[in-house]
Length: 248
Image 1 (cartoon, rainbow, N blue to C red):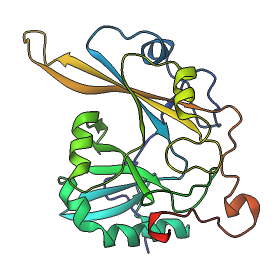
Image 2 (image 1 turned 180 degrees about the vertical axis):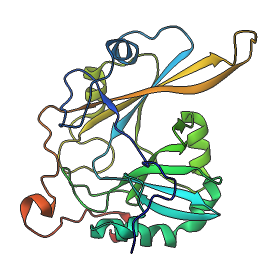
Image 3 (image 1 turned 90 degrees about the horizontal axis):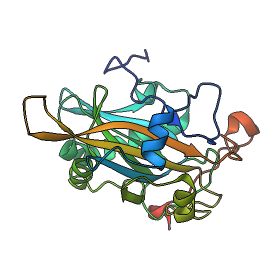
Image 4 (image 1 turned 45 degrees about the vertical axis):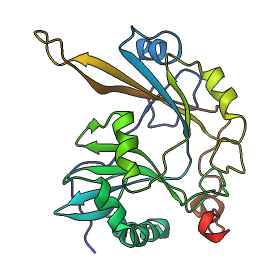
């Protein structure tokens, strides 16, 4: 089967790291000003900082293209063209649940999330289904958090645990809230957290009307976190399957 990108773009990019976060070769740090806004002091009352648990699986998406939900890998290719079995299982799961995706998505939009059917660097005994969604996007534009939550409720999808919503939150306080194992059934210490900074901004300079936009995202990953320690490509062993609600 020939690989192609139905949306002609990656499904999801890389989130910048906060200071002290464990980084890989392709990762980059967030700006100092972004770090201050997210973790120390918001610019003003028009900033809102949302912090959620960071999950450890395969970054995937489902896009509505010509009225059909398509399962995609992070790079934007059809999941059924992936060399990895977990992505083929994802496509099967999307087909089974396509009515739920149609309830959420408008044409051209994509629902991005973490596919947790297989352990990567963290094992899970999930108290819910294996897809956890964290962004609703069209192009590079993210849907604001409250609207995102309302939209995914139409398909009864799960999002990462909300740790905080309001003013800035320090990395130390976020990790205290998470504790070692977070809120999604992790059997190993969780990766960390994601900060989403939204801005209630003026539509234009001549208007008093405002709209909420997602300004930027930043993340923190434990410095001692090791990526992919359970993946067959690293262990030369069979994949480690996470357990989830349907199997309990």
